[in-house]
Length: 369
Image (tube, rainbow, N blue to C red; front, top):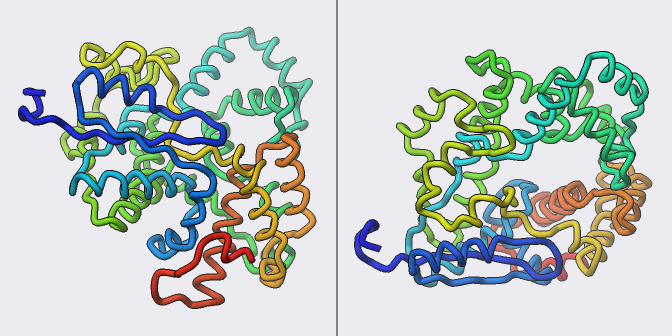
């Protein structure tokens, strides 16, 4: 550990029970390699009971479910240290998200003869229905793949980073639609794409991630959840000179073939266990879909079909029922959509109904009863 000051470094990692994958094995491999003072924590579905308190720290209906592991790993780390380093920014600067791999699929698909692509697109043209957007059957997955092969890369990017207009029209009540008028949240993304000073569509996607998702989601979440425990989080990837460097290098150094963050992996390959360079990015989210098909799903149903949510007249209750049932029986993958609606209703109860002024002294279970 002489390279980092001669002291033993503290490292912290978090995993899950109740379904889903985590990265505990990879974190342990790095810890073993460098002899760090490594600690692990596992969270389980019942630990979502902390949500009312998290709503207080967030102030707004924030839908990223990784607030929960971020809160707990921050609490865990603060028991031992006052400041930590985070890897936020690496994906946005060097191309680590799933869309980057999908774009390479598009390049490969476009290498097929034009007559072949035209025939395939003609057969399935116009068949991308609302049910196909989240369907788990093979046909729905294939239609989404064809949709992402659209000649305009932004079209596929929008599907994976925004909620479609067709979904919103099905979910929203007539009252909410009339209040929104012609407002379209996707316009925010389109405007950012226009501001990107590059003709490379792939760089425009990275620009959007850096200017929108990184500050509005990742950094916001880490700041609120860490400061809830008085923990300082520093982000070396967002050093100004490194950010400027990443903007200057050719895109092929960021993604090469199906290898994302190519230059980072090549740079650090001599310093990391080989197995840590191969796995696909998993993110830091909880296995929300699996949890919502078990005990947490009962709480979600009670919240989304409650009288208070119905009284707000914002969402179509019949569509909510359909979503819950389809997800429960694994016909559709609505985990993140259901979670977002649960968070909204919890926030509304606390800030609009109860008008809280201090940390709420209640659990998620208390709010549902």
